[in-house]
Figure 1: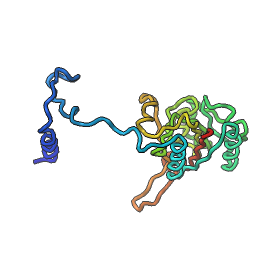
Figure 2: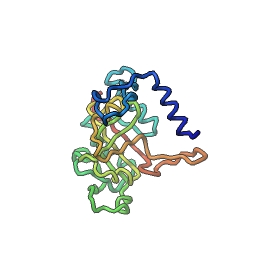
Figure 3: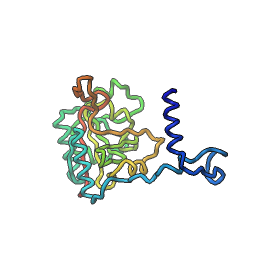
Length: 226
């Protein structure tokens, strides 16, 4: 008996006492056995536990830091000076800028702005030390930032090639508790990039190496009053 036969046998035994559905009353191909659809409870949890808005934002900051992202908090008024200081500390001479990035975010920054262009080559992008973007949504329970290529985020590659990424998250408007809540805000046909900390991998000896598939340093700025 093959492994496939064993698995299918277990499924049949598990469904043995489940009444067979009337296929004519359930959407699907005529005569299809839809017992599985009726037997599986689809009422998944939308979030784990009950938190206030402030607690949700604190959880996001905690999980981002756990993934080795550097977390900052600022008001709208403080944001330009903060971004300027982070770029100066990094020593960046050039910074990549998505087409829809609010210009006031970089009003206090000295580096030369390099705009996101379709004709830019990977080699040209690799010469730029930093990139500043917004985001689509941030997930508190997983410490994940999601980009969808919107105007303030630009093409996916501009956040994967530079070594330093500053990502601005608006609080509370772009913060959700869970992945299911995030998916409701996202359009699946867009180029989604899910970021949980700086790019990293481990070899067989479990030595962690950062910056392999994307930025070595991720700085997340939570902007808002919460």
